[in-house]
Image 1 (tube, rainbow, N blue to C red):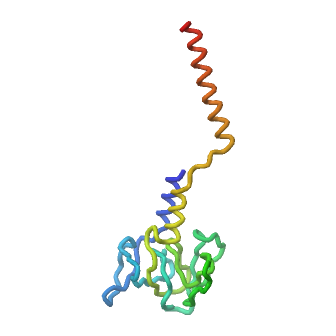
Image 2: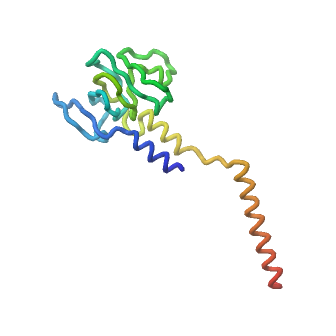
Image 3: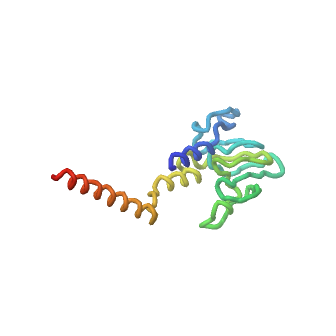
Length: 162
């Protein structure tokens, strides 16, 4: 089950990015992004890394970040920094999160986190660290299985006269 969740995580990562390097825009694989890269995003773009907005190229930017926050509608992003010290993802209105999708507008943002150093990477890592919880039913089934095999072995030994 964990492998299925990890495959789902990989599916949400952006594949490519329009990056400003050496004064020119280039299309690069998202895996080639590094913190400090300037990335341009527009409608339909899957955000390739965690990024902080630096320039609005249209009147507004809206992002569907349901995969991360569970919000049922897209959220508006802006250039204002969040001042709260323990801000949750929903409060970070100037941050674009890896794996989310732009549904309206166009903007430029600076990469602040890639791979495991993103919000989605943090979720992935916490999934890897969790152990499968043994439910009461699983415990009882394990006990029954052990009892069943011991009894079967005992009956076999008694029937063979060993």
